[in-house]
Image 1 (spheres, rainbow, N blue to C red):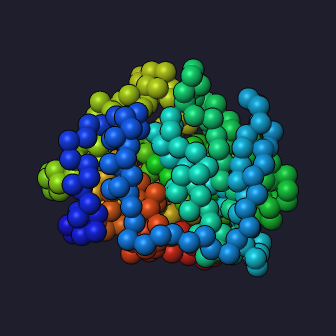
Image 2 (tube, rainbow, N blue to C red; image 1 turned 180 degrees about the vertical axis):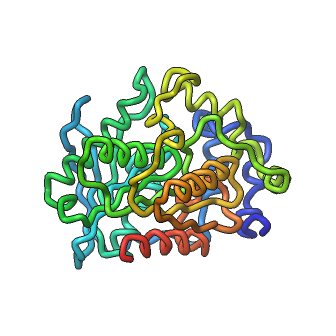
Amino acid sequence: MTLDPYLAGRLHHLEGLGDRAMARSDPEAARCFAEYHRDPAEWRMPDVSVEDRTVPGPHGEVPVRIYRPREQSGRALLWLHGGGFMAGDLDMPEAHTVGSELAARAQALVVSVGYRLAVDGVRYPVPVDDAYAAWTWLAGTGWAEAGAVALGGASAGSALALSTALRLRDRGLPLPRSVLLAYPFVHFPTPALDADGAARMEVLPPVLRFTPESIEAMVRNYVGRVGGLPADAMPGAADLSGLPATSILLSEYDDLRPSGELLARQLEESGVPHRTYLAAGMPHGHLNRGPSLGEVDRSLAFFADALTG
């Protein structure tokens, strides 16, 4: 499929911009990026309550945001936003909109984690430790023991979610009911796009691309090196056997898409039940948009179904 027509019609806002780092640091570039991200309709908060609090962790308190639907089903989800391990927060749509929507759609308690980012000297395993601490806190409330808690994340948050699930398995602790991964970034080196995929990606401007250099920079910033990586830092290299059923959401226009596709093949070989959904015409990070875009709505429905099924 071609790039989503609505998004294609807004690419002109990104003309002349450099990479993603520039879009975050330069005010004019940030304004243009925000214009590109304007959705067809304004998102409206569903009928859920929101509570901010902190939970204890080995590196200090970990911020979390809790979304409670009006009618609770006994289901819950621990959710980790993306951002290349170095960006993102609890207010970004990939955290706030996703948390609100999945709480309402699945009648589930959703806990979004504000893990420490790999900035100012913070590196692996600190973000994983924060994710694990949030899970431990949630388990202490009785949800995890009931076997009703899912674990999920987007992009780099997928790596943290998968690493947390592996840590639970390796320590003989109760596993999540299921794992939800949005456009996962879990391998380094990241597999390359095939020829057709590479040609399709040429429609995107540099600010929406992930080059091999930028991917290496993200990993080096997160771990401190790019050689001899621990298996739970980029957990696509780990033994995945014994994990719970996993749902993988892919973005069609995504340099990191091969990581999610390889993960699906690895889960198949490991005997882990899994399913995938390809968001047609969507670039990486499409959950940072609202459900007024049809494929965002269908992506949220895919995860809501995973939570309720």
